[in-house]
Length: 139
Image 1 (tube, rainbow, N blue to C red):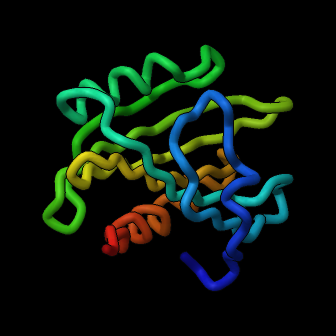
Image 2 (tube, helix red, strand yellow):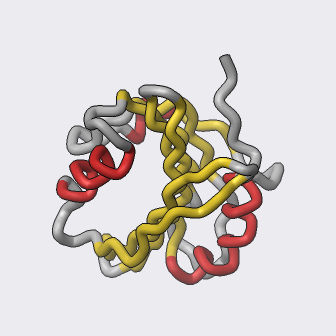
């Protein structure tokens, strides 16, 4: 991510509806027209089904009604097949978009998630895509 992004406390972003454990949180610069900072989260959880697709079916079923899933497709990042989600939501009369890349590492599911207000989301999408390509599980 650009150098303007700062490391935050991943525990501040825990959501009781989300069972994934946050490993890393970054907050980024704001455009003049944005009221909220861009957010990058890296989280993980155990695989809870026989396949990643079945696991993700269960996770999608938990998405709140006010969040619209606009895309779910398989993509290749660094010769690894991952699932890419695009989500849209409205909070306090502001539109937010989210792109999440889901990686399977054995029995661990990793999520690399980028959230921004819609007015800067599409400007930042190429940065998010480049950033996702740098994700590696380190043992």
